[in-house]
Image (tube, rainbow, N blue to C red; front, top):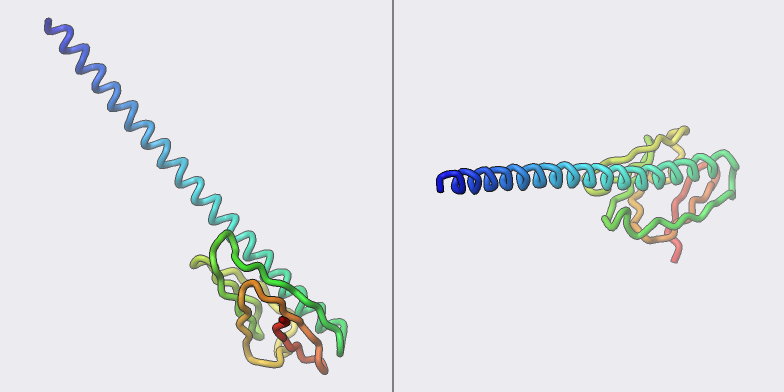
Amino acid sequence: MNSKGIINIEILISLMLFIMICLLLSSLAMQEYTSIDETQNRKESRIIVSDISDIINRVYQNGDGYSITYKLPPKINKETYVLKINDTGVYINSHYQLSYSKIFVSNILKQKQYYLAPGNVYEFINNNNSIEIIQNT
């Protein structure tokens, strides 16, 4: 009779250990998934700041009257973001992560800084070697 009780306790302990291991593995998998998601978010924002920095540099290099139109995505990985451009570079703050890309020539912007809204279309225009950013409708 005692041996049946000991076997039941061993099964119970084994089951508890199995459940603890499963919970640990699922926790590790969730952390890895979160890390991958954050990496994807940084990648998309990095691509956008790089594109806009390249556009500003290209518009400046091609001289007076040259322009390029660019449409910002409405969201980055289903998250809103803030895009800021000033003389030092292009910045995106997306889901508490900052991405940055340098503008190679300083003091070329018509205004000190620009804030671009997600989902809008913008035209980057070289006007007498000064870059002007205009929102298109």
